[in-house]
Image 1 (cartoon, one colour):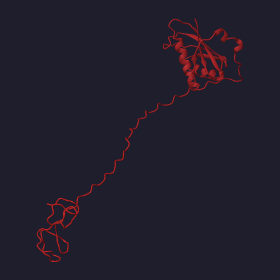
Image 2 (cartoon, helix red, strand yellow):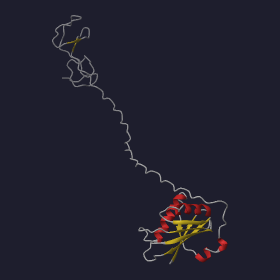
Image 3 (cartoon, helix red, strand yellow):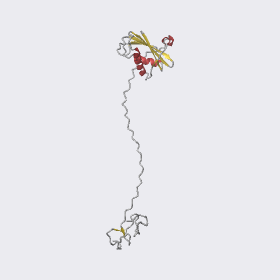
Image 4 (cartoon, one colour):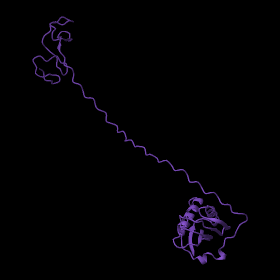
Length: 222
């Protein structure tokens, strides 16, 4: 029984042909591959558990189509029932896409009889077509661990220093103005007798005798 599956590749016939030739020479897909350069590749299909194929052949036709290439995969199957020829064709096309640098083939419908007319045949070229090795997939990249984002440093406002209350001043000598201790009876510098007059704790004013408040700064006096 015959089955046809068509794909479209957005690139030139020669590139698509060479990519199919490279993929079709993989022992997974073929047995005894023959070719008519840039027009046809034919090969027998190996026995396959994966695709449930017991035998048959595949002929691949290449035709320029619009701005790219149309490809017809024609299967002649010994076993039609249960054969996964569609999956077989898709894996072959996936390998072709890798050879083409990830140019993807898109499955589409086309009039096969019109597609295979002799006048659409691509002219051959001088010299053999040599299959290219399948590209080696790049090694997997190690996952990149995101770095934690540090919170921005917000500058704190400068604290305004609070004014310090002046230290209270003790007894002041009325003769020379030097500070006296509470135990001094006479000034140790000028000999003036120390009285009980004390200075204002707010501003040091000594003219506070008999006052309840300092007449200079208004501080309450004891």
